[in-house]
Image 1 (tube, rainbow, N blue to C red):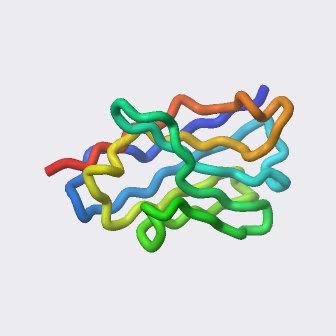
Image 2: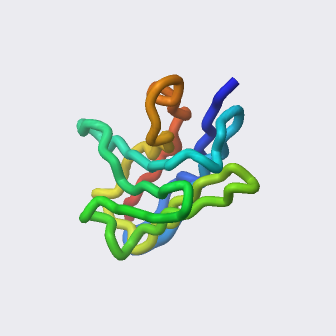
Length: 117
């Protein structure tokens, strides 16, 4: 059975850092491009960052220079290191494989990041 489990969220002050993790199981992880999305209060879910199977990364403009996406194929984990956090980064963060078919509806439960003083 395929599953994704996000963790690492919490409450952090502006300017602080957090690292999120997403553990995958039941998927062909090494071949999958993976992404992080987020959904803030009253907002639609938006793409934040993605990483290909060979490590090429892309970011939404609002997080460039602050967030780093990475992956550990042996452990089947994708990470999102978040630095210089801002209140607008407050959201539930989700990981998701960038693939169709049976992966298209595969989401985890998300992890809540709250940036507040």
